[in-house]
Amino acid sequence: MGDLIGIAILIAISALFAMSEIAIAAARKIKLRVMAEEGDVKAQAVLTLQENPGAFFAMIQIALNAIAIMGGIVGEQALSPYIAEFVSLFYVGPLAEQISFFFSFFAITSLFILFADLLPKRIAMIMPETMAMKLVLLMNAVTYALKPLVILFNGISNLVLRIMNLPTEREEIVTTEDIVAMMDAGAEYGSLQQQEYHLIGNVFELEGRTLPTAMTTREYLVYFDIDDDSETISAKILEHPHNHFLICDGSLDKLVGSVESKEILRQLLKGEPVSLKEEIIDKDLFYLPETLTLSEALNAFKAAARPFAIVVNEYAMVVGMVTVKDLMSSFMGNLVTFHGEEQIVQRDANSWLVDGATPIVDLMRLLEIESFPNNSQYETVAGFLIYMLKRLAKRTDYVIHEGFKFEAIDVEGIRVEQLLVSRVVEAVIIPDEKIS
Image (cartoon, rainbow, N blue to C red; front, side, top):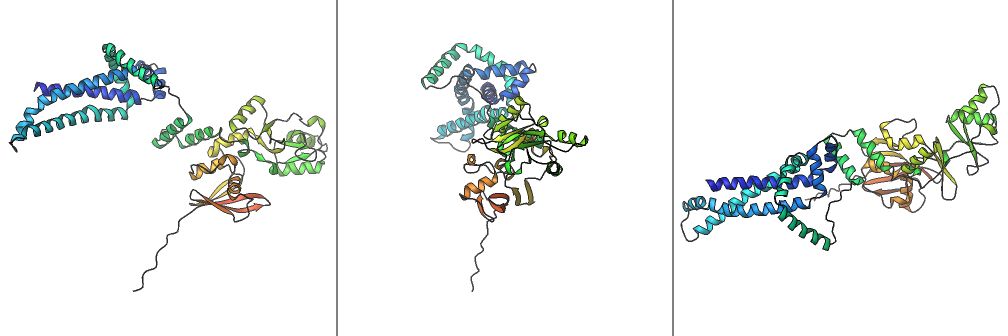
């Protein structure tokens, strides 16, 4: 009976060490840091142990191997008589001793696998932070008690790691992929609201999207010519009630400045004819290169404190205009509503009408497409179609990618205005029945 109690004690001790090994290794550093900042001493102890885990793991291996050896010795002595007696009820012969040894070995191994290894590690994986904080002080005490052996084996392992040119300490760097994975898990579990999930995802995309995905392109810009008369200016303001208008001298590539619509309104209220006087023109325009990411553009707006920027290409040609509102809408997505026509309209469960200027990243998120080929070569879905066709698109031209058909249905000149994106349903061919 004493040997059986000894086996139970060894299994319990082994379970503690196995549980602490997995729990401390699997405990999430971010969660522990939050608890440590709130004053949890045990959480801070786990963090300290994670930063220098060499001595801890050396102690764990010493303890587990010693317990395994002792378990084998004690277990065979404890169980062999009982198993031999049980075997003798069914078999008495020359192999009785070997059969009894096999069943004794199998029984003790099964007990250790189940109760000293498998179950404790499963528990530790389910709630790593909780178990790590419960066991960290005990493990630190055992490590201190076995310090001579720990120093010896830990020193040897560090030497081997240096010879292999491997780091001796864990350096935990939280990457964007790690955060996205945590977001996915939070959204699936329900701790992260759907709106919050989309907002955070859009913020991460700011670094991967460039200004052309958010700007108003050149052909849609409304501007005044320096020589426009009062009637022309008034008509443009009535048709396009914007806050700011560009002023050019003949073409957009010869910009003179900009004017606020309230300055023109002030002239009308005074009963004066509308004119682009020198004193109401702001000649200090804010320019941004089209290669900037949305994140870089936001920083530029913050530094310049301007309401809009002129987007130019490498040849100093105006390609569009972007406002702070455009940048905000790019990562706020559908959480806020801005007046204007939607770029993506769902027709039915398997098809969408898509504006040609729709950023490819928006379509990737909507259709859950992992990637587009060489997507650094284009920004919009129209650009994707042209890139895949290797020529300018015509009406009814299409390409198929990742189970979706991208078809041009509205082309104005050389511009793809609208596409029909539809899910490709594979046809099921039914063979003809044999005629008997």
